Each structure stands twice: as structure tokens, then as C-alpha cells.
Image (cartoon, rainbow, N blue to C red; front, top):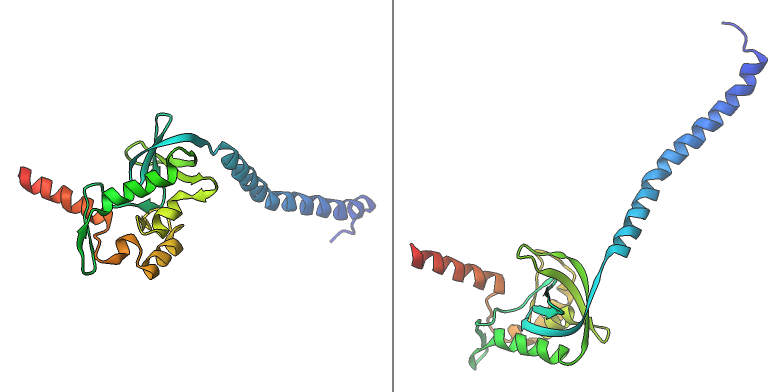
Length: 190
């Protein structure tokens, strides 16, 4: 083996330092990219706001934009639920009325979080700082729609404990109600 030249001895620590800096830079790159992506996504979130027209217990319209309240599923308009000892009540109609009471004549702001398969905007909506999606669940006029989000599970627990709204008796979850009606229509056609 030949002895290292004076020039080689000087370059070796320098090349090690350069390699270290390059490696450190490459390791930091994914963090910088994901940070920039998160900032971009955050700045691209749009807000739809104005007076809301309530279409049903989990759908509103603001300035021509139809918005499905994200993370919740309210009883269908024609759906009936039961109350312990008192029989059936129109839980779907009452859910719609509850949402109307919360939003009537007030400014509603919805964070646009995407689109559903029907082309509706999905939104997390507030009125005067109140999360109306959470309030629909907490008051027992909607289920936490855990198929798409677990954001309102705690609110549903509160409603169950208080036996509020749909938790007063028996209520078929809205997604099961829709499925049963779809299956009945298919059977009737065939």
C-alpha cells in the first residue's frame, strides 16, 4: 500500500464533510416537501359561506352549492323512529327541522373538504363558531358516520348517554334504511 499524499490527507476530511452535508440534506428533503405540501393543501381549502337553505338533516345549500355535512348521517326525511313507550315519531323530519332552527337567518361557513360520489361538496360547517355537524350528532339528530370519519364519535357517545333524539328508543341507522329501501325497489321491479 502506498503512503497517502499530503493532498489526499487534506481532501479526505473535506470529502467526508461534503458527504455528510449531502446526506443530511437528503434526509431533510422529505420533511421539507411534506411541510410544503401541507401548507399548500391548507391554503387551498376553500370555505363556502352565506345563508343556508336546509334540504334535509345532513344537507344544506349555500349560494347554489349543495353541501353534505361531512362525518354525520341524519335520518332520511321519510324515516320514522321509535320512542320508548310512546310509539313512532318522524325522526327524519325532526332532524331537518333541528338543522333549520340552528341555521335559520344566520351566516353558515363550511370548510370544503372534498366531494361525495353524488357531486355534493362535503363540509365541516359552523354557525357563530358552533360546529353544526357535531351539534346534530350531540343532540341525537344524526349518527357519527364512521365509515367516512371518526370525528363525531364522542358527540354520539354523549347523545347515547343522554338518550337524546334517535337514542330515545329504536332507530334504524340512515345507511341501513337507505339500503333496505333500495333493495325493496329492486325486488319490486324484478
